[in-house]
Image 1 (cartoon, rainbow, N blue to C red):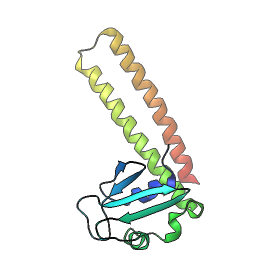
Image 2: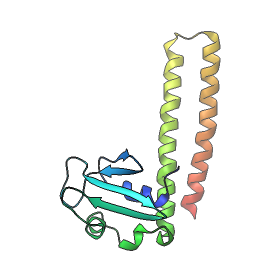
Image 3: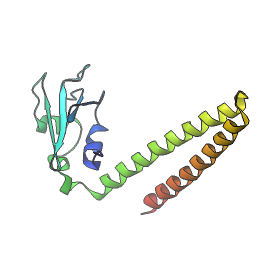
Length: 145
């Protein structure tokens, strides 16, 4: 199941986020956790959070990460937050594609490839560059809105 924009927006504000079961764990921003003790999950378009170490409730956690309680509900997520989350997701895709292209370019420069592998690497680079161009164009359209 894909992560919602709402959940992504919350998780991006937390440290040491890890998937656990049907939700996530992270360091609690209320008491300056060093090890994840806070549980986060989304249920029916609502974010649920609770720290099992300091027993901080959802209001304390929301305040600590600089959001309003209304930001924890899908139907109240502002358009700005949606665009920002989408831009962040696109930037991560750009970064991943940049790294993938670099990997294939280094492989080509290494010279340890067969002729068939070289052709495949060149094709991979070209297809990744095309995807990168499309993502950058999408990103630019979002910025112009």
